[in-house]
Image (tube, rainbow, N blue to C red; front, side, top):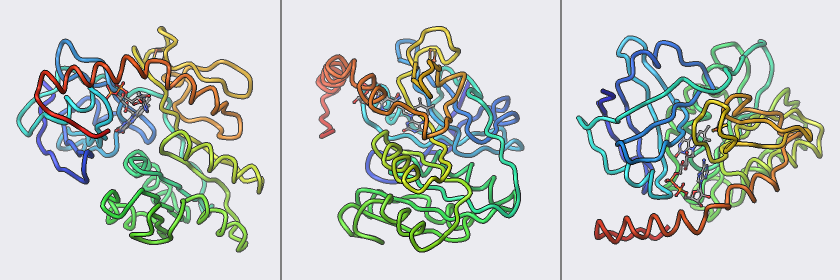
Length: 282
Ligand SMILES: Cc1cc2nc3c(=O)[nH]c(=O)nc-3n(C[C@H](O)[C@H](O)[C@H](O)COP(=O)(O)OP(=O)(O)OC[C@H]3O[C@@H](n4cnc5c(N)ncnc54)[C@H](O)[C@@H]3O)c2cc1C
Ligand code: FES
């Protein structure tokens, strides 16, 4: 059983779970994810492995409640168990080089999946500048963790409640304009965030890697649910990614495909909320 040994509410609707999964903890590499099911009737939810402890045999997952599946998972507490945790899945991210300057641009929940990559670059001897954007101050989390593995951290909030008043992409553009030579930018967050970072990087000819989050079903390359177009070619994010060259991604298609079950998703959440006598304004 995959017992939840620790649960922390990081911000409204954002939960951190430390889960017993010794085999996964032993093999995980930056960029890997797991498919999680809370119970036998639940859909599989892909979640990035945000941290792990091979000695304790645990992995850390950070999850934002946005639909029925994540809302149900968010109700689980310490000592409850997940039914299955399949992984580590996805291609390992090879963190190479020394003395490079890497800029990690995380949007919203993207901070958690960004953390293992940031730490790996820091440990490899690269200089890391992190840019973290959120809607407001209360949604910023893991600042201490990111500051511990970055040479510099810049913050932005959409409402100006903390750091720069505006989007993280503006901070990135300012850095480039000021003459910061970035060897690679990594963008993780909502699709519009990654698309905007990729657009900025294209303007200044800076390499960019994005971590795509299409709808996934089996996570093994068989169902086609996570199909994305990269450089005009069909790829499956679960086995070919989830990380890709941001300059090659067809973000418009991704956004369209992410909305294809929107009506069913909203109905399913509403019915579940009615059955459980709760209401979420999301
Ligand atoms: C490789 C990968 C890693 C991920 N890592 C994390 C993570 O670490 N933490 C986390 O909170 N979430 C992560 N996600 C997103 C997470 O899997 C989805 O939010 C979740 O599956 C939604 O399920 P639901 O039943 O709650 O919502 P649904 O009812 O399925 O959908 C509700 C709303 O969310 C949108 N949505 C559905 N699936 C996704 C998706 N895969 N990504 C983004 N939006 C989606 C829908 O368009 C809809 O508007 C990851 C996704 C992938 C593919
Ligand atoms: S999730 Fe089925 S092919 Fe990727």
